[in-house]
Image 1: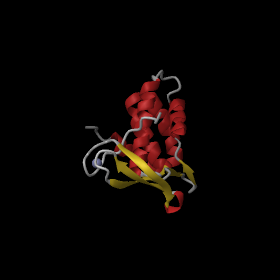
Image 2: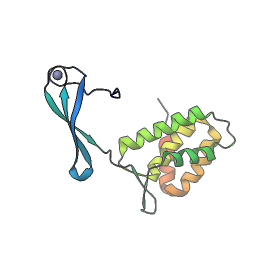
Image 3: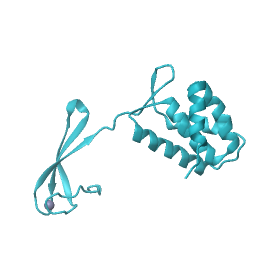
Length: 157
Ligand SMILES: [Zn+2]
């Protein structure tokens, strides 16, 4: 039994019952090229599957490391330690930060991520926000920090 697979829509007739007739790695393995055939009109077309660039974080000391949402979450959990914030709200906040990193990546600085964490914490828990802000001050540098705080203090819409 063939496994049901969401079909790529045929660009010629719009049918979605297309199948892969050939599949091979290209671009040194960075992409997969697939020849597809439409069961309805029998036209053939090509699709490419590509790796997303890995999301990297530039640390304050210049080192690069892979972006890890679990680390962001752990940092927020530490700040929220006695806040009793529900984990759904935390998941949502981490997902928003992850989306921010995807949008501004593939390379982003740890300071930018810290700023997004502050934005999220501010709306979740005032104490956690202030606690994280004191950590953030250490890795953003004092002058960056006061500038960042000023921009965060600007009225929200
Ligand atoms: Zn077709």
